[in-house]
Length: 475
Ligand SMILES: [Zn+2]
Image 1: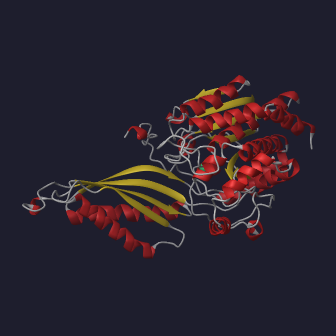
Image 2: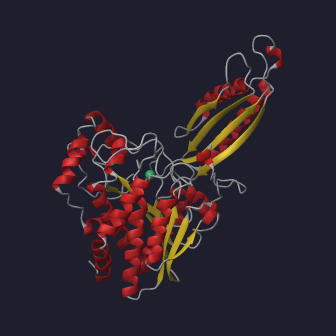
C-alpha cells in the first residue's frame, strides 16, 4: 500500500466517529428529494470547514452543490446523494416499527451515499496537500436521485463538463461492480380536458376526459406487441373524475417509458405522444403533455471498475462486531429464503448461488455483467455520458435485503452500514488518488469511454425550458 493512500486511510480512521455521526444525522433528517436542506448543508459545511470552496444552490436546485479543492488537471469527481423515500420511516430495530408515521425514511442508503463520498474527498485533499500533488478534487452534492433526476439538471447546466473521471458509491447488499447498463427513461404526465355534464340527463353535452385516458391506455397496450423486448411502459391514472353522474372534464395519467438506448426510447415515446393525440381526437377532448424527467442509459467503464475492485481487495472487507451480527441475524429472520434466493438470482452476479447460505457478502468478485441490461434507471447515467464514471456497491445490508424496504431503512443507520461507510470512503479516496496520479490509467479509462460512447452525441433528455419541480411536495 502506498504511503499516500495510507495517509488518506489514517485520516478516515482518525475521523471515523465524526463521519458516522454525519451519516446518522442525515438518516435522522430523512429529507425528500429537492428539499434535503439540512442534509446538504451538513455535508457542504463539513467540506467547507476542510478548505473546499463550495458553490451552493447550483443548477436551479437549492440543495445541489459543488465543493472544489485544488487546481489544474486532472479533475476527479466524487458524487454523493442524500435524499430519502416517502412513507418509509422506520426505527433502528430489527423488526418493523415506524419511527414517525407517514414520514420519509432512508430506504436506499443515501445517508451513507452522501457521506462516504464527502469523507473520501476530504481524505484525498489531505493526502494531496501533504504530498504536494497537482490536480482538482470535486465533490458533487446531488439531490433528488429517487424522483427528479437532480444530476440531469447539473449535467445540463455544465457542472460536469470539466471532469476527467467520476466515482460514486451506493449502499447495497453486495460488494461489487456490475458493468451492466440500465434503461433510459422518460417520465411524463398526460392531462386531458373535456367538458362536464349530467351523465344521466344530458350525456350528449359532455366530453369525457376519462374516456381519453382509457382509450390512450388501450392504444398503448396494443403498442406493446411492437416494441423491443427490453422496453418498459408503465402508467397510473392519477385523476379519473369525481363521481359517476358527472362526465369527467379533467383526467390525468402518468407514464414511465424505458428502453436500453435513448434513440430506442424516443421512438417509442413519440409513438405514445401520437396515441395520446389520437385518444384526444376520438373523444373530442384536448391533451396537454407535461414532461417530468428523463435520463440516459449508463455507460460502464471497466478500467475504473478494476481500479476500484483492486482497492477493495487491498483494503480488505470490514470486520463486524458481535452486536452487528446479532442485529443482522434478527433482520435475517424477517427475510424468507424464497425472497433471498429471488433477490440473489435477480442480481445476476455470477456465482450468486454461493451466497444463499451466507448472512453478509464476504467476497469481492471481478466486475461482471458486461453487455447486459438491468431494468431500472438512474441519473448517474447522464454523468456517465460526460466522463468515465463508475458507481460501486458495498455490503451495507445483509444478503437478500431488498432496497426501499423497512429492513434497508433500519440497517442504514446501524453497525454494518457504519462499517460499509468507512470502507467505501477508503475505496473512493484510494481510487480517486489512482486517477489523479496514474496518467496511464486515466488515459485508458478515457479511451474506453470514447469507444463505448462512439460518435453518439449526448443531448439533454430534459427540455431546455424545464426547471426542477421545486414545489412538488407542496401539492
Ligand atoms: Zn439509491
